[in-house]
Image 1 (cartoon, rainbow, N blue to C red):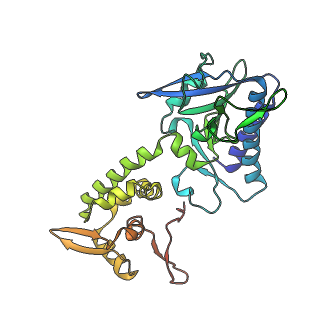
Image 2: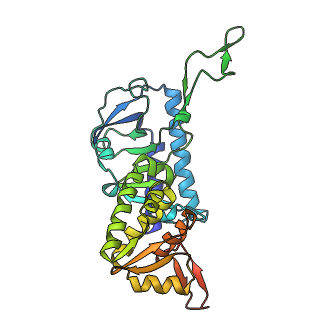
Image 3: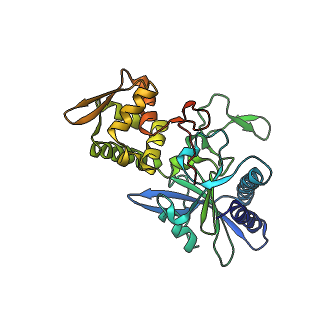
Length: 319
């Protein structure tokens, strides 16, 4: 699907939002075991109007970023997170990490009321814009503690009838932007790091780390100190890189002889030794873990045009 087709879908979503026949709701989502329950937050009309404006601004920004700016439209990948210009990213709804979170919202318009007192830490917040029939438009927002303004702050006050009074209760806000938009079978991601948190991508990345280590072992490649793997799991940036290793199946095709060749040719600060029939990789200290990841993710390259050597961890695969 071309960028023009994705932009057209986003423009249709914007027209849908601006139509006269639609209504809107602000929804909360709470996870119970592996299932998600949804409810309508009882927001007043002025707050809903503001939520719609936030959704509208996000759609306008995504569209103009492609049609008037330097952004392109590409399938969602954590490899895009560290690009200088983050593209507008898309995913088919069926490819979401947990598509059931949206399936119910796309098919059932009838929900009960839920408040922030019922669910103090909702897993997700959603602006749902719908017509009497047809697929709704969803604006997905991450819930963070920054939305709760506590009354314990020393100068939190408001204007009373005759003077400024201390606010006795905690205040709530809604985010000033939408993290992702869902319309017509696709999710368009505006803030990828928030999207990762919303869908617990980190937990999936941690599983990918175990899969990569197992795959390397199947290729007779081992990590000398498995505590290094724990440091990978404690750093979301490392986990993103490991996800790319798994996505391209590098861990299942890497040859020990090729690893040794790259270590020698590019003077990589990784110790590579043959022990008991396996290639064992080690590093002198934790600061070298990135060099180990560069090695495992096939980031050491030579230009065919200039013969220059590069470390290119943010490389983009060509078709």
